[in-house]
Length: 231
Length: 339
Image (cartoon, rainbow over all chains, first blue to last red; front, side, top):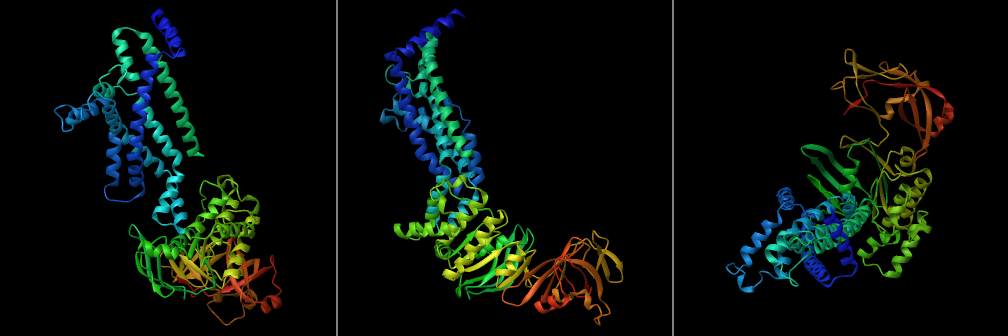
């Protein structure tokens, strides 16, 4: 118990003093998670919108597959991407393994289904009468799609926030594809795992506090947007 | 003719919800559409608004058969607009909602603003120009939705139960605004409504839709089953006040009967020579002036069942009919159609 209390007090001091090593680790985490969320959003939002807006054979099957992909463990994606970017892999010549780019690729693949599935849910919740209203006012398909997108905007932002929350707290992909290299690919979660292995809890607890703080902030935003969706 | 429809059917999962062998609608007229819930009114309006395609049949608009391709329909939708029963406004300001259709039609900014202010004034919403649309009441939403269509100066305005879910004041403003559109731009109005008095007051023609079929003029009396066999071909339905309506040969006990107005006469004419005639006692509940004629539509309550009679104004004066007066009705049980 003393160990936990001592570590917690030291960790608080570390957070307040903005320890350089901690700040660097947080910066790497925010950067790779930010990029992966951006790329997943660029792919997942249009994909989710298309699936939700259009009618095509096998639509339900596609949605079922996407929902299944939500549960894929991070280590499976880590292994999958590793097979492509390792020296012996198809993309081995690009030297991506143990770089921030590798983490971004893996994390992007992890959350594309999250963004897509939640975008589909957000679009599907929009009342069908919006489409009818736009059409009777003379809108073409593109204008009607824009109306639906605009009505679903808060739900889509909530999808992106949820996806960001998923990647910033994952450890499998960052560890397997980033390699936990200090100052380069060390993220909050991989650093915490390492510090735990070393038996040095102070930095681990400090990073845990920062991570929890970030998660709290994102959840707060998520509920704010969800609230606007409901209203 | 604006619309010329032939052999139109619409089915959902093998269930025919609309079956219209022929329908012609003229420009500048006001049409009323009556019928119970589930009769197919909304489906017909959606087809007329080019929002749904019929399963079979030909719909001609301005003498040209409608091609159900998106670019073709989009052009038609710029002339024919629909106000839903429960319209939605986009989650932005009233102004932006009003501007949506005008922007699509490429109207200039100044003209858009001018039309929006005029449109909102027409429905008594002039003070709500920049109000958030999602904070309006049901009646206000309905009025703004109507105004957003009126500013487009449509050739045809379709209204699905425009006054069903609003207060009396809103209903009045909606009615006045719709008629103003007709006066100012010669807009053809097609109104589905349960407000029988309003339809008879304003419409050039009222149609009755029941189980997907159009029939008569909307003045027919519809009597639902169940029917109980009496004797021979006669079946009867008991009313809450103990009286019985007797009619000839329903196809099944749950069938729906249609009695046309000429089959009912004021009770003081019971000396008429029809030996098959039956008598019912009722009370005058409403007298409504019919548009384009000197006739009065009299609603007689028998039990809780409203019967409609079309009577010349002279007859009303002669018989000194007024709401609350007891009357006797006579009808021929063999003059019935079954649905």
